[in-house]
Image (cartoon, rainbow, N blue to C red; front, side, top):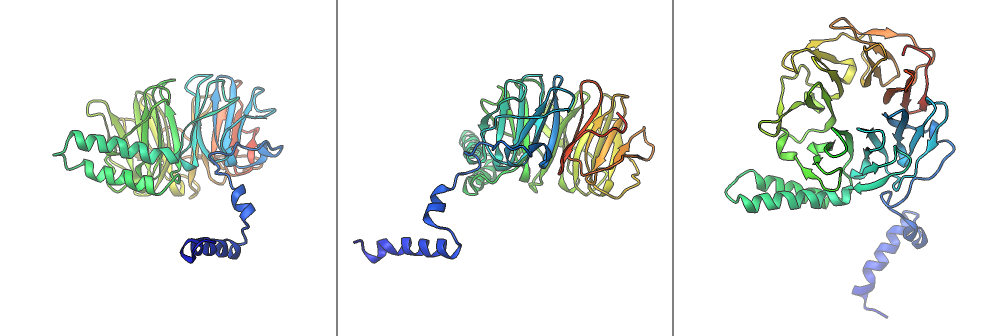
Length: 359
């Protein structure tokens, strides 16, 4: 029999587990959600879904517990994809009909090469800390006289110590090679080889407070970032940095949408703004509802539609106040897209919805 010093930690551990109602058998049954494939569920279509994208003519939705669904008949029927994790998934994008990426909790990055039918894990939060630490340690060694690298080395150490808890909130890919993922506390990574390797860009966001990066998207030829406390950035190819733009609001922005010559940003309590000069000046788009705007999409008529967290649909026309469009049974909306035939598809806390209102 071992000494007390050997057994004491085991006894304490057993007592703590017993007090928490956990048996030894239950403890050994635990599997990290990053290692647990998403379970097939007949209710997945009605479970909380957080984003929606087009993959060619196919619709692909992502959501809680690793659920990924796809539809090949304009949203009529949905099938569940094969997913290697059970982490909540927050965003999805398809730069081509076949190649797609999804991101979510625990720093997970998933990749599909078959239009969303099956997925493979490229990265997770257990790896991100080490990746960031290695990157900035190498820069600190290469430039020992630079004062900026030690703080980023410390950030890498913090990310290692906190484990996998690094939610990624959005993903954007230029093509099947170049893409970005963004998340909490200024977390941002770029790949130039389709996700085979990733480079941290925390030092290139002009974000010393470490504010959350909520969304990344292109409008026209420019790439933008938005986040909490009015964070608004634009990629400068000359300096290879995301540089600050004049922000019209000090609350959180949740997303952006645009096209050549027009950029919309939106967020907390119904705040929405429009710029026609690449983000240098802004006009507020008055909303009839003081409810946070969660997502937006471009309709078949070319006009932008914004959706509140409560499910209201708002139509944007130039600098005019946003117009509330009637819907028979609105419900919370987290993602929106058009089907191949121009029908509106929505996802949210109640799963998939195919409203009959305006396309």
